[in-house]
Amino acid sequence: MATASIQHLSQRIRQMEESATIKMAQMARDLAAQGHDVISLSLGEPDFDTPAHIKEAAKKALDEGYTKYTPVPGLVELRKAIQAKFSRDNGLEYGLNQIVVSNGAKQSIANICLSLLDEGDEVIILAPYWVSYSEIVKLAGGVPVLVSADIEKDYKASAEQIAAAITSRTRVLLFSSPCNPTGSVYLKEELKAIAEVIARHEGIYIISDEIYEYINFTGKHASIGAFEEVKDRTVTVNGFSKGFAMTGWRLGYIGAPEWIAEACSKIQGQFTSGATSFGQKAAAYALLADMTPTFEMREAFRQRRDMVIELLGKIPGMKVNRPQGAFYIFPDISSYFGKHADGITINTADDFCEYLLHNAHVAVVTGSAFGADNCFRISYAASEKELREAIRRIGEAVSKLQ
Ligand code: PMP
Ligand code: GLU
Image (cartoon, rainbow, N blue to C red):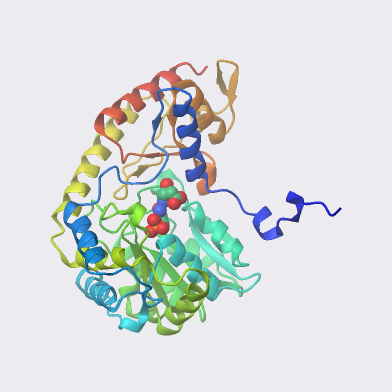
């Protein structure tokens, strides 16, 4: 009889890493299910509920019968709202046929990579980078090329570094600002310098992931696609998960050159079709409604950031910077490498995170998942009480290291 074997899984899936953020969140849930008092600062997800007026809009849409398939790139009503939002907030003018709504920004990024990459094409990813970038790029046949910056540089790569990494195989530059996992925000002049480098090279496209746009403490968000020289070579990615606390709704979108938008729709038409109908109606409403809840959430995140920086800064050996956006802090913990406690030696950030999970019952994510081996990520999208207790526990665990 023929055997069934895990060895028959495709190379494609066997080579893929599991998402470290999702894996760590599950490990924390499992430990909690065993009765441990675990504080999970692993998953990057607002702890706030979706604002009530957005939920009401979804309920109304359901009652009005928005329960059917929608056009693959999204309801016209939502694309019009996105068009207005891009113009209002980003100085980006897109036609409706340049906008594609997906089941989350994650799907949007996969659509773009599958549309632009052939086997062996290089994608410059600014590191530290969000976990899924490298795996999506590899799935599409691309080769991730990391351009890194450390904490001394606020984790921001320079235009010169990017220029030096470009080869004849480079097809895409991919990054997020505000950045997951570092919280760093690229300033307008930094983006301008990057745009000028890309503009000098034929056939290189920018994927600008702006999903944390509304969680920016610097005042004004800047979109690289607004620079004339790269306007027709930039895909701007955004979504509802972070700014509107709508992670479970699964709604993301892009603004792109028409031919890329068409390609993304083509892929999506074969994989998943249009995003959830009544969710799209609520999303259209959210974009044009009162944004006060979004700005209140941003203010809450800013206050937590300040508290987290202050508390972490008191832990000897913990190196922190001052992130300007998102809800992450990304300390450098290399000063603990080589130290040990409770029979465990900390040689890597993975060891450190495992030590925190089992000895302090605090779940965080190792920097190695984000292309930064000396660091770990704390998501501070949690209550002040949880954050204080988690950092107290981290401090206690660190004090035992010798
Ligand atoms: N980009 C970044 C930088 C993220 O942190 C996330 C986190 N979810 C995503 C994209 C994907 O978001 P979505 O929930 O819209 O798929
Ligand atoms: N983007 C979030 C994070 O980085 C959510 C989890 C995920 O989609 O990877 O934690």
